[in-house]
Length: 253
Ligand SMILES: [Zn+2]
Image (spheres, helix red, strand yellow):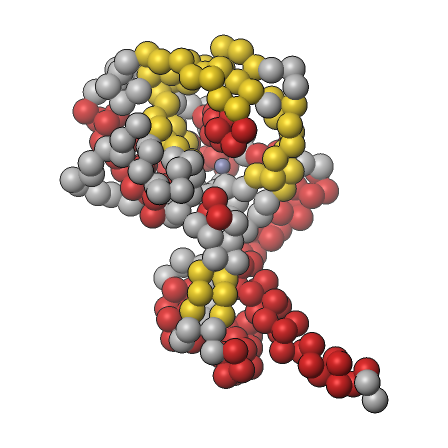
């Protein structure tokens, strides 16, 4: 499959859990016309930019059954599913660690059918069927849940879900840059010692990002490109590295 050439681009805002609009149920697309093709283009751009591997229209507050997906390493195999239906699923279940653009920084295990057959329309309005397994099967089920108004964290225990909600509420205040203690630790303690800071993210969410100058990190953080939770864990990771010699020194006395 080819990535659709994008001429007019529009990056859309991705709704963040627990936004109630993520629980709206999407309607089937009545006709795959230019409006839908433009929606597909915009969704693809938004997904690639995020970066993510899948995006359902629900996540950008459009409540029509459209999904875009790209699981390739090269990010040039766009898949489009319009009005998707699962026509068969295996009895065999599999557990995957899932995350998503609407719940950044949160990954947890969800059990789903190991294999599925999906029927959908492509961006030309042509019907197709696809047998999917592995990550593709997971991703299809995950994105189809979005269309039904369901977010993957709802599969987790109420306790875990509440903790995630609290975390997300805190994390989604606009990124505080001035007097941010985590940034200060990175600026004054980590960068001077290591000269580089790595923000860790799973490969499917764009992978690790390395910064060799504090200013670049601060800029990326202020622009919302780094999730506050990922920033915090980066600081913690690097502090452990810095403190290890101190620990060894103290313990050898
Ligand atoms: Zn998702």
